[in-house]
Image (cartoon, rainbow, N blue to C red; front, side, top):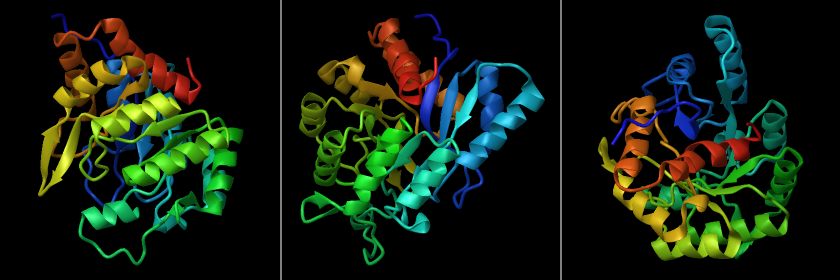
Length: 285
């Protein structure tokens, strides 16, 4: 098979420094790598809150250092305890500063804490007694107003179904189910099929998953299987990259795309999952 090109690729989930966990690249180094391979866009994510200002500074750096090119860095916000949990004020500020993705709690999600065997006294709950908390309705409204994306993050499958249904009822158009294959999230194939069938969500399927103890498991074979099960139009190829244990972002993305191509996925389908779909979610060409 010929080597697949990263020209125009878009990844909506990459971790960078500064962080409390050492990452492979800082924001500027990731920008350098993206420009080098001709990427179109990346969304940077942190468990510590908001990356919108970092993205803006990176775009300024890109213009100064690399001149005119097609790459854009985008920010996001993650609704962990450090930003007040389900905090519409924090969401509004991030979106006004250019954030494109609003993630539900990750490390503060009750599901995450339970799976990791940690105390849940500071858990951020977005679902109580089978319904979304009132603040979620305000978050949905803000996502609609700014044409942003809702990501389900590290919540449980049961919570994800409640949030997705409430979001759809509130008119949220862009919903991404965050790495449902990761054992912390723990969605079955049946869960994923049902979410796609009933709510037309996008399944974000990532390069590898953290199994604990610094060990990662490749998701590529399972990702190929889910693409064949639910159809490529409801799957987005992301890396969730940035870990020092995994290949650098551009290597991971190239390996992922090449795996799909080498295993029978048509190039036009790969382009849709890595170019057309994420760029559409971000509102860019």
